[in-house]
Length: 517
Image 1 (cartoon, rainbow, N blue to C red):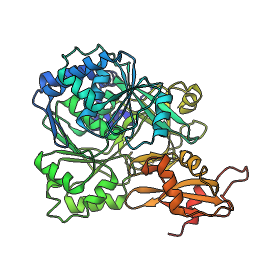
Image 2: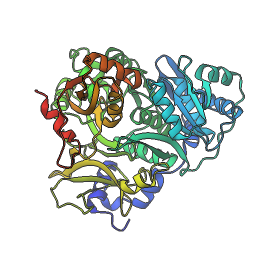
Image 3: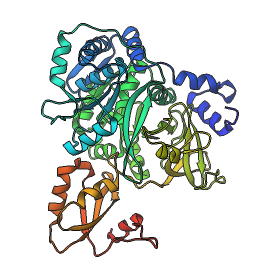
Image 4: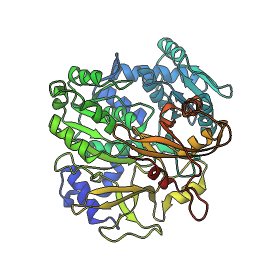
């Protein structure tokens, strides 16, 4: 901590509404990472028994939630799931998902949450890569012959008859979650996240945002995604209430905000854009909120300004990644600058570096690198990728480019990675390309994102055809058989050749230049 820069200390102090002299960085980081989710759930049920978790029409008090988790712990144990067991959970957002997730963690197991729209091919790849032994799925989801398959309905029915079992003693350094992400190679990488890392991530943001047990969160984000799941984590840590919708319907979201007297809304730019389609009168529930966040994709400056003008609330943009949790945020108290992601959250260090790893000059753009208690320590069974992901000193390379503005706010200026971010979901171009090139008539395919007012980016494909003619609609339909819908191209362009550089490497950045605005 001797090399902690004054910029970091100042940023942390401002988020915490302290002076730099009052800061104790060592104590702060230790407290951020303290405990485990079984311990947090037990404490929340003890201290805030009446806090409510609502998912669609299902509601459980914190006492009821803890009791349900304890019964599920018993059932999971009966099926041989114990400390270190890896459990893939592939189910739509529901109370059953939350209980199964918390029960997995409370036996000392490791959860692997997947998109329920994954095809059998995609799900099998997740199971294999995670080396999981159990799959939890909905009744209408295809199972997998290679692992133990438990149906959510059957699991819940067995838990209703089971005795409550004590939660396991879990360390902050024990892995809680295996999350999947990918880099420019398109090969799936697995991110082990410990209890301490997940807790440090949400605690830092909660402290900065003034979160308390009096808050009520509303969101319509998928729970298999870190953004949506962090809302559950926050409600447990604070002993606060939450109302979560399993799918996004703007009218239902507005009704829920009003009914639950919500104070906090988690959102992404596409949600904020949809809300602006309503009249000022219909948007009245939004004005009761004290905080509206925006993440998972860049928030356009114009959209932020329009939202502020229509609702009177400035969306608070923040920044984070799967590997690093929540890292920077615009201030809760103080001026929010559209087009920036703010300053480092408590406990997080941020530097900007050149391609050689050197710190860039003040005002210059560089790769965003991070260090702190919420940063993962390396990819699962992939020492080469881990070595590439860190600079000496434990600095995680995000692959994003940024620069500090004149007020020490970070501006995202680009991406080294080739990920497409559409509606807050990450799409790896190479994964889509491999599927498209299996289609008869496609000789070669290249995939990139093109700007979209609604989604931020949309997936587009450029294909070189063989002598076999085909329709773009048929190629898109083929992709939907093998990929989740959000990964599939919305636009297909047939070209004579794909742009390549002097070394013969695909010039992906040149693809979008061929599309007329």
